[in-house]
Amino acid sequence: VYLDRGGHGLVTLPEWDVEASAALACRALIAGADPGGRPLAFERVDGEPAAQSPRSRPLIDAGFAPGYKGLSYRPPRGAANARGR
Image (tube, rainbow, N blue to C red; front, side, top):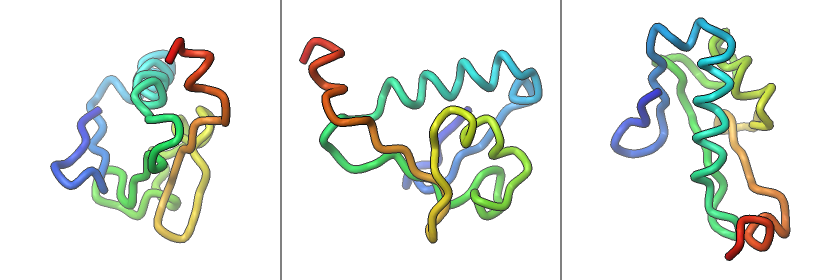
């Protein structure tokens, strides 16, 4: 996957269609989320509104939640301690 420069759009690559590859990419995105910081959010996936894109299913399955601006993920409280910070 590729995040656009502003961080509002997510562009998937052909491997996204392989379930294991999409799951791995989602885990990598989540691992980079800042506990206690702003949520990781996308307004668009492959140019479509994120919450309505058929390519958003792996993100939702990984814990991203649909909202009025697209999809967002907020690490659970205490995640910073679990990661050794």
